[in-house]
Amino acid sequence: MQRFIVLAFIAAVYLTISGGYDSWILFGTSGKPTVISVEELETHVPSNRYLNVTDGRAMQEEAVVYSETRNYQKVSNSEITFIPIIPSTSEGSSSTPKLLVRISEEKMKAIKETHSFDANSIIGIRKTQWDLDDKVKQFLTKEFGKEAEENMIVLEYGEKSSDALFMAIAKLFAGLVILGFLFRPNPQMIREGFTFHD
Image: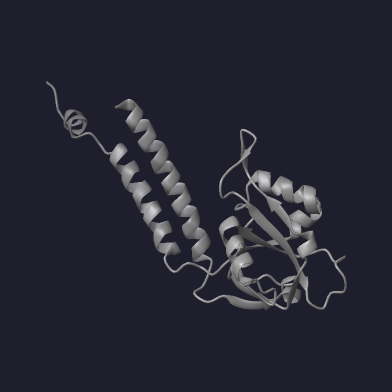
């Protein structure tokens, strides 16, 4: 029983933190993406994290791929492709990219099959510094340098799911319900606490 309580507590904490964080991220996005060019993004970052970045050029030759490993084996579906984007007006590929598009393995497969990636209109959610795992940050620092990694804007590729906020709130609610159940007052202890003895 004690082991079950510990596992339930860990699950509740995870659901509460994960749901709360996801809700906070999604509350920072409006229903429609803010349209902004790569060049404008270099000087002004909109408060709305849901963006449609236009007038870009993908630096395909500078793209890097990160994947998690466990016991020297690649973890399934952990591959992430990072594609640097520069203004379409930039000459050559020597410009330091301000924008880095983060594409999951599943979405990358779909892009390769449909050839649907368009650097002139990239829709996604801008990530915060807290979104990136330390290992990913170290990987990007190694690939692009510390200064570039700290100043790059990372855009999670893909349109915002209509039910993403609902799922985030549901996780938060489930976590709070479990915590409330685990830490509910014991009626017997309450009665004993209010019992007067002569």
